[in-house]
Length: 112
Image (cartoon, rainbow, N blue to C red; front, side, top):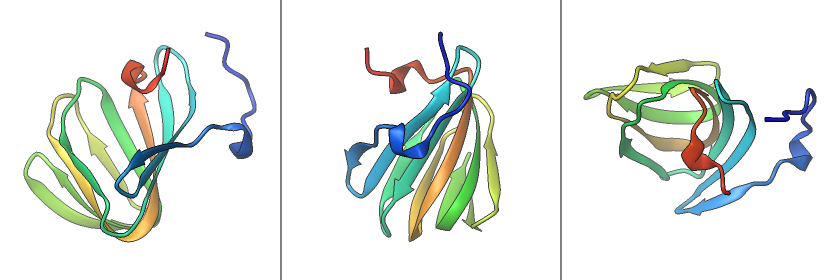
């Protein structure tokens, strides 16, 4: 994969996923991926699971995060970690943005 060393936000395509959620796949290689996800208040990232390890930084806003049946409210500057195969999801309490890091990269996020 030929990844650029410098990525400008305005050059990254924003995908509207519907229901108040937009996603930007910022950069990736085979081992890691960075994704920015914007949520409107009330938008839901439905409970799901995947084999990827996920670390997420709350850039702004407020989110109720559920991981493996446990819930917590996270705000700007907070982080959550999801090991492989644990069920997880979010509800946006105040419009905001999450910065997701996945390892390995999410092939299902790349349109071929």
